[in-house]
Length: 116
Image (cartoon, rainbow, N blue to C red; front, side):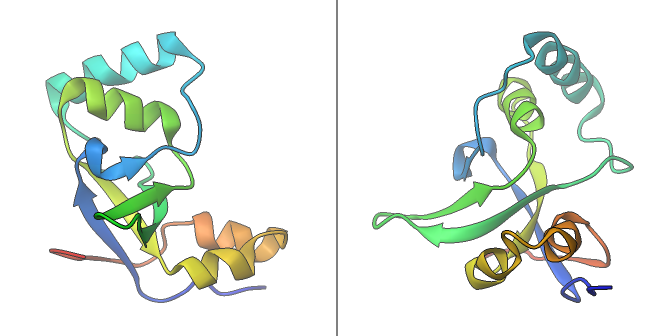
């Protein structure tokens, strides 16, 4: 069994700081989530988004690996999202290995990072 990277950092991010993995395809799911986020904020009992930090030349960005619908709903609701951050090299090493990828995508033990 592959252990997850310990501890994992997460950061509260605004949607405009992140790139989603793909477009949200289920509009009804986005609408439901956006309404819940606007009323109650992010549900801390639900999974955090997962991503890695990269520099696009002009600024530091976060590429999300999960959560397109939650990203779009947070954007519409104007709320911050918790994103578990990984090193790009760790993401590359996990790609193609189901056990490593599962460990990467799990939240596990988390520490809140105040800034990147």
